[in-house]
Image (cartoon, rainbow, N blue to C red; front, side, top):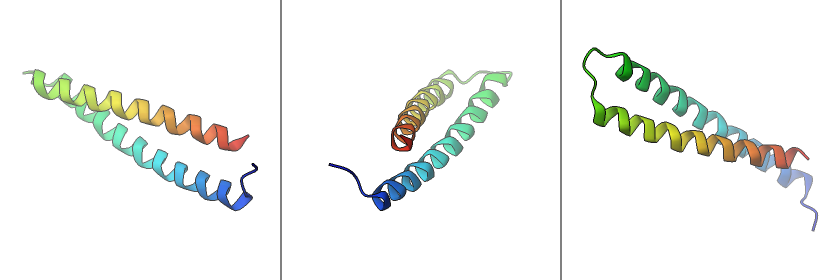
Length: 73
């Protein structure tokens, strides 16, 4: 069954907004990780938590990008 053009446009717009939000969150987490990593005294627990968050956001960004590419076809 063929999806309607309006549905595809709506889905792409929604995915693009979610990708942008996820990218902003990823950038914040990356800068937090860098700040914690460069600190003279390392907070290992905080570094581990931020690294976990970075990994989750990276996987989410990759999934959203795959979905966006699939809708572009």
